[in-house]
Image (cartoon, rainbow, N blue to C red; front, side):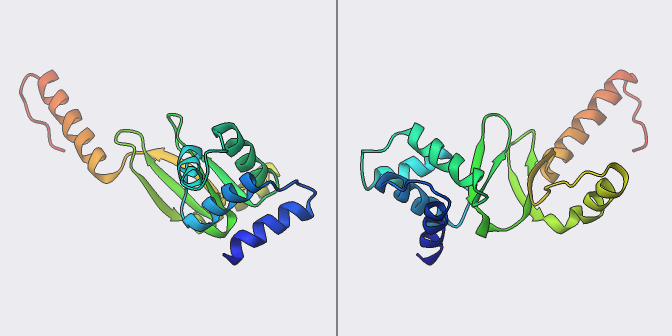
Length: 161
């Protein structure tokens, strides 16, 4: 509960008007302890009141992001998720085939962000981002498909892998 009150107090301190609807939206995200879509936040809030619509949810989530109190991550295919900054820095590994999302430690990007600063004088906010590729299972499936296609192309001769 303290985290929720901290977020609300921070918004008020920055001059934002806090309506009961906004407070319920902040509370829903803060208490979830996970990433949520705007629709999921709306679902939680609608358990308490019908006096909130999706536009209000998006505006409130965007307000949290603008003030540095939450993050917005695009997981592709229209999947945008939000989390409070308390969730901490991490990388979303998004499988472009099955859509599975795994979290990885943002510290893995330390050498990349240092190189970007040194070589390009660019300070990258890599504390919360999505990287796209294939999960282990989908990569193995793709590998089998490529091998099958290669064997067919080569006229049935099996090449060494």
